[in-house]
Amino acid sequence: MHQIRVHLAASGTPILNDPLYGDGTQLFLSDLKRGYKGRDDEKPLISRLALHAGGLTFTHPSTREKLTVTSPLPNDFAVAVKYLEKFAAGKSRR
Image (cartoon, rainbow, N blue to C red; front, side, top):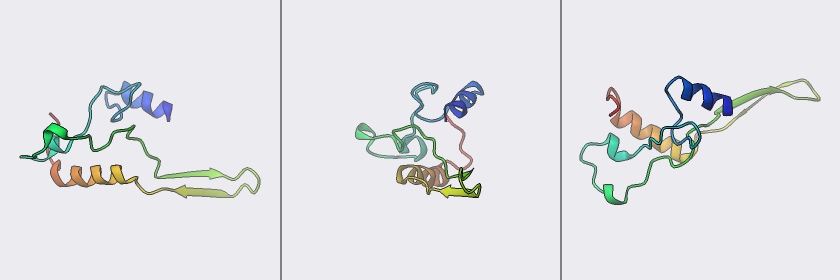
């Protein structure tokens, strides 16, 4: 996880909400949706490090069998992706 964060930050694309290598950018619905009401008490769509492993493949230490473990997107990530797909398609970042 750490090396991914370092490389992405060095390339100018830090991970959202990365407290160590990030740039402080947060993702709000008001940044995506025109005319959004409720900015005063708005919370970020994702309020933690926006990094998720959808699947990991490794060799079992005893059987030597390849195993794959998968995990669906956490709810906050799924909601953010839904809004990004709906409102940010083709929109450049401010």
